[in-house]
Image 1: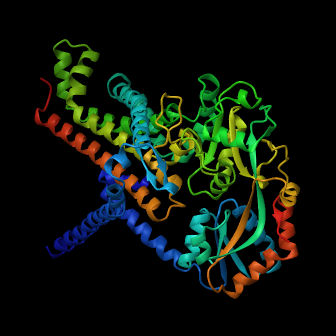
Image 2: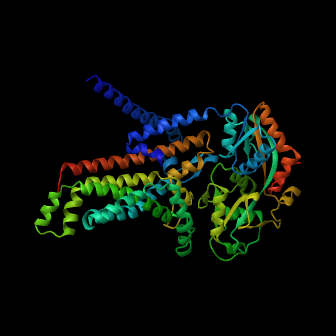
Image 3: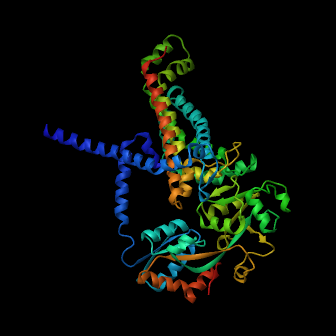
Length: 274
Length: 286
């Protein structure tokens, strides 16, 4: 909104904007140096990384770790430009990206398919799920529910959760243009909670108590089923680095991969890697 | 004398740097955005609704329609209510009451847009979903929220315009036997026309540029809306939703979305200027 003041010819406001901009740039330039480890990227990994950072800092009070969101791709960009030491990524790296970056699996996450608690549908096949999101099935009656329009809720283009969902479920089909687009797991949750016709997808660890998860091909979405490999909708959580990383970053990285760090991730609903 | 020159110089520098800033921003937006429009072709960019950045398809028709329809809806609500309020405040309301109502309405302008958006999601959207159908997140919800947001802009500028009409116009009209309402719509509104048009255009600028509240209540679907209850994505929402992730051509396409927005706002402002000038040309009522 503020940015568009400029078109209204309020010259003073542009000037103010520029001044503020210059100061904020100056204020930021201190970042990325010294002992601080900057971790930037996927909003799906962010809450878990924050928790890990909290535990890490409780054990190592002299260290400093800062976690920021922004999205998987933004995280990679931040690592590329050196703004972040570690990028968080909630999808597999593309061949080009894996040439440039080193991705380390820190945990796996199931993708839960969520519907309104009043929706009687409890099980969907992968192809039904695909049709629900592509718009081929537009009425809940066709998948054994109560007659009523299906309202798929998707995430914005570029979101790691969306990328994984498209990759795991959609195949060659596209998510319908009619799909509502929300910009966070929280917004999807709010919408599904209130709309009896809604269907959405989100990280298994973020579902909470207010939504109903749907079995896929008869398999309950649980951490155990993800680990056993029976639940198919699972995605990797990666820590991404480029070249040599600082001693501080390595120290934090080691903590995440340690027994303790992995236990924390498991406790929060993720699936540990070792 | 010397001090005068110094101050003039200082002010000139400040003014010029502001203008330079504007020029730099404009050049930058166009430099980043125009190549992809040329690349995708005017038809592929402006006349297609096929937005799939991963596949290299950048059609923004549905968003242009979305922005315009939401703005139109907002002005239908905010414009009508805002102008009515301005008329009541200046013509039909005791001065003491007006002195209380006007600052209260102006206070509305100070509420951050995210608060309006949040209220829309929590109260308005469920109401629409329950009583009118559809997903609730819709053109209607966005129009209502934006209508409320532009109301203070429209009202306060219209009030200023109406108050700037010389008192003698009003007195003359009433002296010749016109009723209050005849005086208002035949004399006052005509005399204040250019100011009122400016109020509407500024309100439109606000509605078109608003982002946060719209993202929260509009649903952001990529289809051209078929009814007021369908979800819609505006140009500004598209930029804000995807900028965090966009790189390469996708990023350029978002700048091109910005260019489109820029041009639309330029058209609005130019229209406003022309109308205002024409109004000033034949000053006063017939």
